[in-house]
Amino acid sequence: MNWPSHRIVPCPARQRRQLAEWLAERQIDLALRDPEAGPDVSVRRAPVQYLQGSGNPRPGDIHILKPAPNGTVLGPVYVLLLEDEREGGLLAVPFSRYATPAVPGECLTGLRAMPLRTLCCWNARPERAEQLLPGHVKRLSAGKREQLRETCRRVLCGESLTDLLARDFGPPLVHPADPRYAYLDEERRRLDLHLTINEPDERRIIEYGERNAGQKTWLMAAEGRADYGPKPQDGK
Amino acid sequence: MDENVQDNESRRTREGSWREWKKMCAAGLCNKESGADLRHFGAARYSLYMRRYGALAGGAEHQNAEHGWHLLETHAAVGTDRRGKRYKDWLFARADQSPDWVSAVESGASLLMRDAVRENLRREYSPAWMTSIQQPLSGGESSPLTLEDLLPDGVDPSDAVAEREWNELSRVHARETLPQLTECEQVVIWARGEGMTLNDPSLSARTGTSESILYKTHRAAVENICSELKNRYRDTSTACLIRLAGLILQELHRLISEQKSSQKTDSGFFKES
Image 1 (cartoon, rainbow over the protein chains, first blue to last red):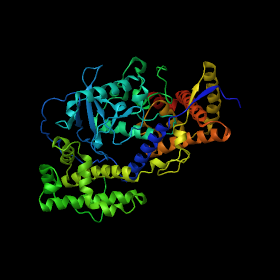
Image 2: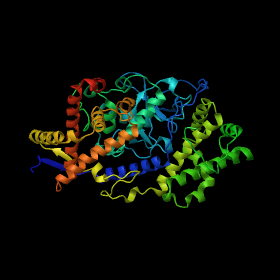
Image 3: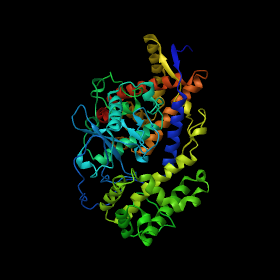
Image 4: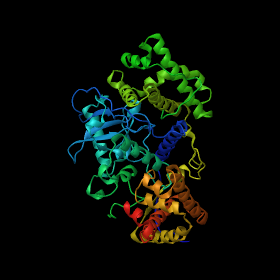
């Protein structure tokens, strides 16, 4: 058998260590869950009236999303508000439940608080004030806000990262049976449940850059590339 | 309760304890009865989750259970001021939506406790540092996948001719593989090729199976393809095999799309996405 010519590019040991850490954390997470847990479908009372927070949401504020009205088996969702350069409003970028970035669309924030350690840029959505619990939990400094805004922009625009920057991001998705695909589905649905959006996928997912126009970009933003699934240039 | 925690040691907490805790910031600042109520709840939930994780937790549950509530308060807070403890607003907002307030607030606190225990286990008991790259991944189900499979050394096709050869090879394998796939396997491979999530309700409806079965089916189908390649090309690098498996799946997606769209009964579903 003659194989096509190719060049082998070594995988950094750092990425394998990072993936091992993430898989270990995921394994613990799944082991702790109630195997029969599912969405809570009990009858709800009228939505609660929230106390108003001080002022409007601002870029750099971190908020908690209001609890999902149809129940959820996971904890609170923290989001960072950043400027949406294309649409002019604000983006809500969720934080991961895990300490380690899972995929190239997730990065370490450098923040010490446990719910705020990893940012899921790939799962960013347009912010809607009525979906936030009133009052921010934290306001980032201008420097940190700018750093994370630039990081998010690079992910959403599909721009390449410097070697130094890439160290804060998760390892690539290569194998089509990688268990991280199930995690991505889970996180995406978790946001959907909290945002209670009834629009088709294409409209609720932010689309950045001409390269990805019209595509289901969420998966590509998470993966950092599109090895599996339609290629960006194969526009339908 | 959506987190259906049942524990012999647990008893129902009082609504007043939760409300006082929210007002006073920490259980340590509440009156004796309320503080004890919450600490007892915390210890019971902490022990439950440590037991659930099993052997790796060892005897730690007995040493730390009394600190369970403190662990929750420490883990969930983003800062030391009231603003940093707005997770309590989430907890209460969640409970306010429920007809059974106390059950709902206990359920929410259980979720927070579960995250705190997870973090504790990750720090104290995680085996990640000694994972071999050739060792099959641990988890609930047996899997032939290893770290090296998930992150092999990359393959960089050197020119357009090589790319064409890769594609031709994948087409041969895809045509061989397609007749061996079950209907459900075809649906999940097609769906993934479309960029769909496998927890999409339309897929469960189309196949008549649960989302967990769909995930298992997809994983098994891909692992079969990879195993077949591994057996057939024993001396070939993992990187090449993964590269080929990815191309085969793309080709299978194309073939399934063509095949299904020509069948009247399926055309609606396969054209939807």
